Image (cartoon, rainbow, N blue to C red; front, side):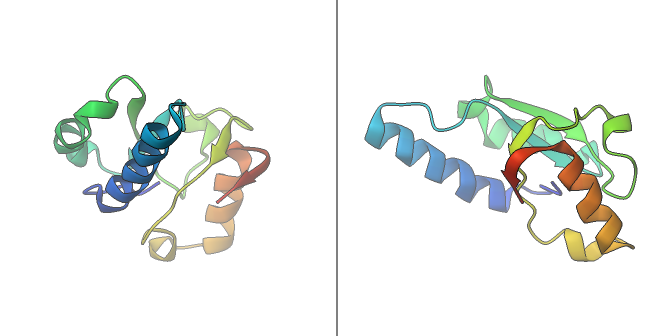
Length: 108
């Protein structure tokens, strides 16, 4: 969440790619790149072109109902959040919102 320019995403996808090359398996089946502003999406699509068949891009406001924004409750294994949670008005509500989309045992 809050992917912005994609700095953290670069590190995450690089680690997944290294694991796939090392094991010959699939480390990630889907990566949803989100930000409050879709202005970052075009550059991110170019930057992460090699993952285009496993990436989607969605606008997300962490302070609003996450399921009302098209995210299915209980459907994500992991939510990565870097340099974004502190910028919300209500951290407790934001974390509750994120937890709603995590599968049982899912992690932030």
